[in-house]
Amino acid sequence: MIERLLLWVDDRLGTAHFVRHALRKAFPDHWSFMLGEINLYAFVILVATGTFLAFFFDPNAAKIAYDGPYRLLDGTRVSHAYASALALSFEVNGGLLIRQVHHWTALIFLAGIVAHMGRIFFTGAFRKPREINWIVGIALFGLAMLAGFTGYSLPDDLLSGIGLRIADSVALAVPVIGTWLSFFLIGGAFPTDRIIPRLFIAHVYLLPAAIAALLALHLAIVWRQKHSQFPGPERTEHNVVGSPLFPRYAAKSIGLLLAVIAVACALGALVQINPIWLWGPYEPWNAANPAQPDWYVGWLEGALRLGPAWALHLWGHTVASPFWPAVLLPLVLFLVLIAWPWIDGAIRKDPASHQLLDLPRNVPWRTAFGVALFLFVLGLTLAASGDVQARYLHVPITSLTTLYRIFSIAAPLVGFAITYALAVELRAMGGVRKAPRVRLRRTAEGGFEEEPLP
Image (cartoon, rainbow, N blue to C red; front, side, top):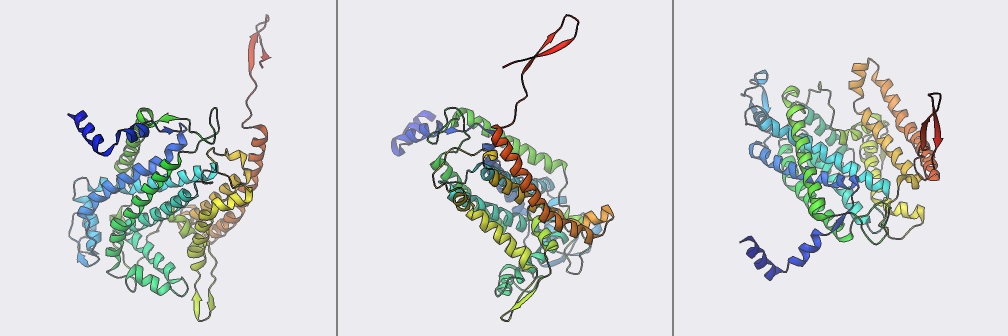
C-alpha cells in the first residue's frame, strides 16, 4: 500500500530522483558541524512548549486582586499577565515544568547560536561564497536575543519590569527619534497597559515567524552551497568527504535531537529558573530585587554599568549617557560582524572562494581578534552582576566597577597578544608537538631504560 502510494506521488511529481540524490548527500563527520543542529532542535522545542504556554497565558496588563494558591501574594494587586503566569506555575498540570523547559531551551538556543557562530568565525567558514549565510546567522542571533528578552518580560514580574524600564530608558536615549521609538515600543509613558499585549504579539507571532523564515533560508543556502570541511585526505575545494544523509547522518541527528530534548527536560525538571512568585509583581517604585538578566543580554547591562556618564547637547537635542554603551556599542559590534567577511578578505587579500576551512592556528590575527572580542564581552557580562558580587564579596561596588573597566580594556589586549603568539608558535610547529615515542626495555640488573623509536 505504501509502495503504491509512493509510486503514485512519484508518477505525478517526479520526486524519486530528488529523494535518492538527497539521501546520498554527504555531510562532514567532524562533531563541530552538529552545533548548528542544536539550534534547529531547540527552536522546535521552543515552538512546542511556547504553544502550550500560550493556551494559558493572558496578555493583559489590567490589575486584579490576586486570589490563587500562592498565599503570600493573597489580595495583592497584580496584572492579569502575572496572575496567569502564577496559575501556569501552580495550577496547570505540568505548567511549571513546561515553563522552565521553555526558558532553559531558550538559553540553549542562544548558546548554540553563539557556539555555531564561533566555529564559523574561527575556521573562516564565512568567506566567499558564504557571506550571505553569515549575515543570515547574525540576523538570527539578533532576533533570538529579542525573542528571549520579550519572552522573559511577559510575566510582568519585578525582574521583567526592571528590564523593560531599562529598555525604555535606552530607547529614550536615542537622539531625535528616541521619544517616538519609546512610544512605538511601549505605547505611552512607562508603565502602560499596552506593553504586555505588544510584547505578546512580538514574542508569539512576529519573532518566531521571522526566525523560522531565516532558519529555512539558512538551511536552503547550506544545502545549495554544500558544507565546508576541514583539510584532510582526499578533501579538496571541490568535494565533500563525509557520511551520507541516510542512514548514518540521520541516525546521528536523531540521537542529537533526543539528547537536546533530554537535557532541556532534565534542566526544566531539576533546576529552578525565574521563580516569578519570589520577585513579586512589577511596581515602578520597587527596585529591591537584584535584577540580573539572562546571560545573552547581560553584556548590554554591563556596558550600561561601565559606560561613561557623557551627555551631549547638540542642535537642540540631547544625547543621553545610555546612548553610548547601550545603542552605539552594540550597533558598532553588529556592523563589524556583518562586514567581517569583507574585512577578513581585505586584510588577507584573498577574494577566492573556499570550501576548505582554516585551522585557527593558521590565521593567528583572526583567532587573536576572536579571543579579544570574547574577553571584552566577558568583562561586560561580569560587570552586569557587580551589585550581587559586591554584596557577597563584601567589597564596594565602585571598586568592582573600576576593576571591570580596567579588565574590559586590558584583558582583550593581553588575550590578543598571548593568543597571537601561541597561534604563531603552533603554526610553525605544524600543530601540537607530539611526545617522542620510546620503547621501555628491562636491563639485566632489573632496571629499565628507554629506546627511542622513529
